[in-house]
Image (cartoon, rainbow, N blue to C red):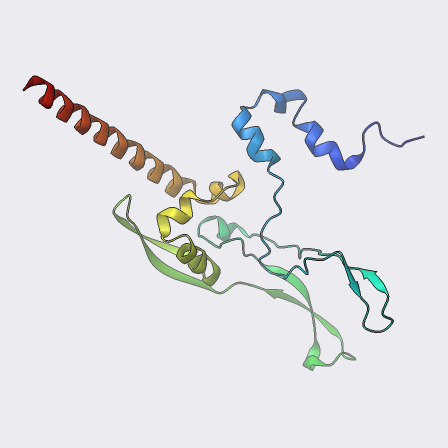
Length: 189
C-alpha cells in the first residue's frame, strides 16, 4: 500500500498544475518549471555518478551534494553573484584531535562603481569578485543584469533591471519614430 497518492518527487510539478498556481501566466509558470540546477558557487561537482575506489578497486557511488548557503539581508542590496555565508566547523590549531570550533565563512565584498551604457549612469554597488568575473563574462554590466534568468535572482536587482528595460523600450520607440519620420519625408518628396 503506497503511503501517498503521488510520489513526493513530483509534488512540485503537480503543485503548479492545480489551485491558484494554475491561474498564473504561462511564461511565469515556465520560469518556475526551469529545472536547470543552479551553478555551483561554493563547491566543485564531480560530474560522475560512480568512481573506482582507490582502496578496493570496486565501483562506489558518488554524490554531488551542494553546500547549504545562507543569504543575509545585506546580499539583497548588492550584487553577490550567488555567494553567501557558509556555516561549518574548523579544528583548533589545525589539529584533528583538538576540539571543533564553529566557523562562518563570508565572501569578500568590494564597493565598485559600475557603468551602465544603456542608462548612461554610474552605480556604486557592493559586489564580490565572482560578480565582477560574471560581468566580464557577460561583456558588460547591462548584459549581466539582463541575462539573469531566474525570478529570484532578478528580485535582488529589480530596480536596475526595470530601469534598463524601460530605457531600452524608450530607445526602440524613439528609433521607430525616426524611421517613420524619414519614410514620411521620403514619401512626401
